[in-house]
Length: 168
Image (cartoon, rainbow, N blue to C red; front, side):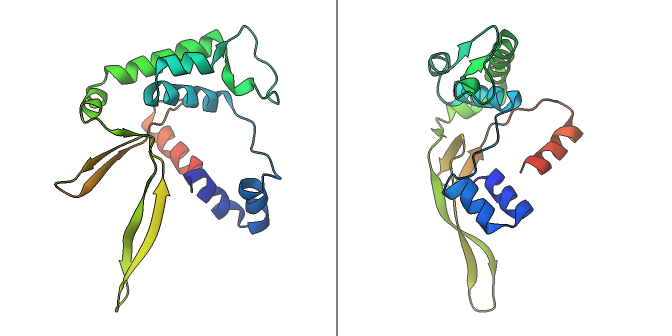
């Protein structure tokens, strides 16, 4: 389950709504905002390739309506420049180069059982599953380093922190 699905479950508490939204598809997902479109595009460049990004998105003078299925794949010139600028900025960072030198696994399913507590007689475990953007397995120390890219409308740490709490 994604953070947003868990957040929806916790905030709504209605199993019927959640089933219709995420399982049966009777309730369609909310329309994508420009911020989500930009974030997905930056993610695509960094986790797949610029060629894949250019093959998937189209720069247009005016985007179609939000209800149109092509809407999430249309970019204004300003959005396009922002996306390339963000991806370029990430790729210039030392931490990015260090991560790439580790040859991480990219968008692969990661799952396993994790100890989350104990009872007097036995440990309490939970099965977890997700698809992070990148992860590096350190077999020697039996650890996994997980990296998941996030884009933001602000570089203000306080605003970003509260946005993360709200978004999930």
